[in-house]
Length: 382
Image (cartoon, rainbow, N blue to C red; front, top):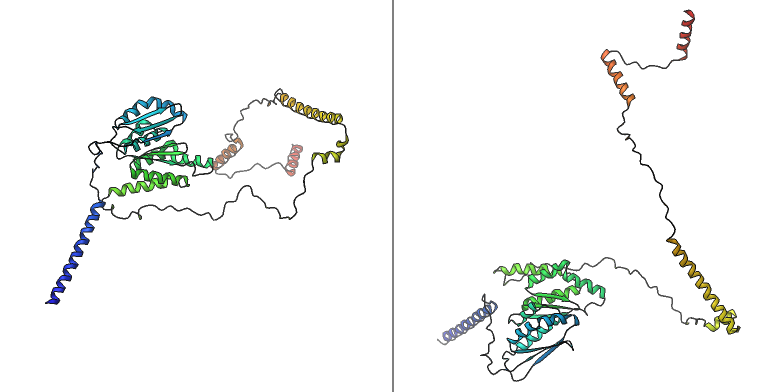
């Protein structure tokens, strides 16, 4: 009986473990799936009725060319931040925007959203798009790309590659990630949901690393199509995604200017001659200063005369008349192809006549010496 009891106890414990495992598996699957149309509850004044204890503030600088636009849209900025009970100030003398909390501010995260708003406005993002950062499900990311590429010309080309012809590449990226992307100067400002911002940062960083954005856009398109299928949501998508690899060139590209290394010599090169040494060699060192000045002036005058003659020749070139081409009368030559061969036609007509009569064609033979003699004899006989 004891053995049976122990056996039943073991079975009971085993079944209990299995039940725990099944419960854990169910809980994990429930956590992975999010119901459609679910939204997190917004933060209201009832959640924090007493407000904030300390004042928080942020400030940012803006460039000179944004001053006119900020002046126009500043009433709208104050109105948007006033709903969150945040005070905003625009200082045109220093060229800065600052935001700070007030006694009525109840949302502690509102000041962070206000900071992001003024950053986006300073980075040339229009107010209509920048105001969306005050929503709960929106975030922003300012990617600094100016220091990623050393060569300035190469950086400009890659930045233009991100924008694409007539902004087509940037538009495709915005549609796939549901984000607003603004490329301005040395930064790329992105505004949208968190998942989209992650993809935008990846595309931008890869573009600056000389990976064309069309490859990442293609993968995003495939992911978007796969996410629509409910069966493939829980599976791995590696087999569907394209794999782009760099092709290593067989031959290494040689530089245009090759620097040839000189042979190593332990002795240093000889020092160049100074002006005093040159004057001693030519004998000018022992001349008087007046003679030296005279020679110097003569050399200057010779150079001036040569320069004047060259300038005069260049000026005179404009007055030389160009050689005119001789006028040739256009003659309409008759086309040789359309000419009729009269002799060939005559021979054809003769052959046709002989065929009708039935006699063989007779070629007229040239008169020989014997025929000429016979004709003469006949004349004498007559």
